[in-house]
Image (tube, rainbow, N blue to C red; front, side, top):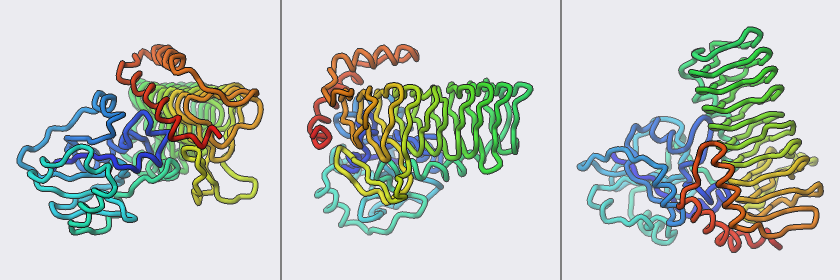
Length: 409
């Protein structure tokens, strides 16, 4: 069965993480939601339907699998976290969860007649959905509703994904220590320097290719460190941490996801947080992930408080954002895309996209300057900001001003 991943309006609840990417590009555990679909269902993702705003950049990053020209299709929600193999719904049937469409089977002719924006209209989607035989989605296919769902699911994903393929292909220097080495994977070209401790007694550890673990760093499982990332001397990566590709990390990190190409090199605590790409956290940036009252945390999505029902949520940080030295981020804080925080005072629960926050208050960050800095930062990692990515940043600067209006008040 061919698979087409589709975005619905649920992407709005995942902002700011989805301003510059499709929902299926979000990470949980060792990889992206898209990768989990291919791992569990095979190389059958032949089409993706996403919002107009991100279509050009997503299509440039996405390589479709070959479609079987005679096979039926399955529409699969791009927010699906797939944790095991499943039998997809056949044509005429659909899966739902909490009233939302997870997947639907279609004959080839029916699929061919659909348009990419069809499933983004909630009313049209509900009418179409109602004409099918609907069953509850299996437990291994759940929808990501909010950014903290990714954070909360990541530890179990790490335990599930890191179990396969232990092996020590990389170099372990004398004086490095492995606890429960059978639960540790060390990829090709990875290096673990003297004094470093990889402790997999409470969960597996996966160190990917060409990772550098510097002296006296401690990595506690379950944990994943992505290709070409660097773990600085004395760092403490605690349970449930997932570091994407080409990151530099130091200090203490617990239960957090760094999407990729982001830096938290210095001392400071990052707990139960999601950090998108091209983010730089200044020295001694600290997140609070637990309220003094031990109560549940409200998160200001798009500037509007949402009750999470959770006790541990740190920060949700959009792409290209930066914090200055000694920044203290509040419990459940949200920072938009290309936001800059350089204040020794209290940081609000929500910092809008393209905002410049100093001790004097909140002002607009010039879009042309933001694009220039983004281009400079990316070139430092041998990545070029494409014309499509520049246009998307400019679009986000305009649209976010309306969508995040509550954050400017």
